[in-house]
Length: 248
Length: 241
Image (cartoon, rainbow over all chains, first blue to last red):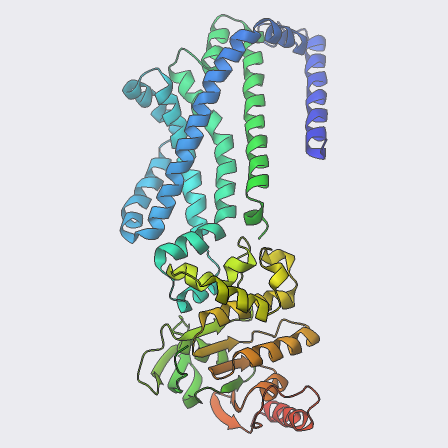
């Protein structure tokens, strides 16, 4: 077991102990702050319900990640290929980020309905900018020596882009993808809060409304675990599949 | 490879309002090695970059032309101080980079011959991070050789290597770049003397032609004439005349 996992488990255990102590010592009502034990019991009792909603949120996150990352890569490459696209699209992209994504959620629900599409769109919107920005940044920082070499070799611009610039920018893109893995669950859950009938965000709102605070906490921790696992898996995938780009 | 042209550079350059080099004429004889010696910041690399058609910070007014009146684009091979290897690509793909960047097929036999010629047969499928500094420069040399260009510009390609590897690389480059018009930018008088039949000194904004040995090259590292000339050149550089 590596040290990051060990320290994570130790921190979690410490947090649970403090939490239990606070509940025991202050006698806070269970509908305000349930004890870790009660949250655990609720998790086991509602396992099927939580699993069902987790699957929905996970699907939204995965679709959001796939579409958001793809669109981000296409946009950054487009900026590099076409100065006109960069001229017109970059200000639009920056302006779109100036509008808080939270504010867009009700509009997206209005336009796209209560189903999965509005949540996936939220996740895409929140992922799109960091991926585009990270890759674009990397593409503009190709080592000058490599550009000189390609120039002397009479490189074709597209081949230069795919054989040198894009691989050289991979560490930036991979950082963007890691960020996306953290942001995607936020997008999906915000979408669910605004209007949905499924997903962990919906389950949390539902439990909160019915004063089932233990279930709300169980859903919250499931979401946290889901996000951390996703980040861990994506980091591991990057490490294994893209080692040669990371080792520059 | 097409025949190696003579190249003439004449002009004046300023860098940020300061004179970088005054009206100079640099002649690269066809099929021969020419050294451009000088201290850091003297404008050696700027001159090389101008010939290569690469962007420079300085403002240059003058002419760069080949004796056959054809443009130099597509006729130049380039090696820099850094090996400029693609860390994510195999050695084979690095060596064939030029063809890949132009979308041309690279004859496998020729590629194999060149990999063998620089002694990297067993490294072809490895990545640059698995190679030593000397081996990496061999890859850079092989990449330049595969381009098969008649004009070769070398911008201090051996300066980051240890003494033994540097001497080995000098010998290897000299033996493989015979018959090409080569410009070697260096700050090492010993390197210039060992490899080049013409030596120019660029310092104090002026270019002067210094004495050089006659062939064959490379000179042995213990060649008495070469060592004496190296000392003479170093003294000339130190005195600034």
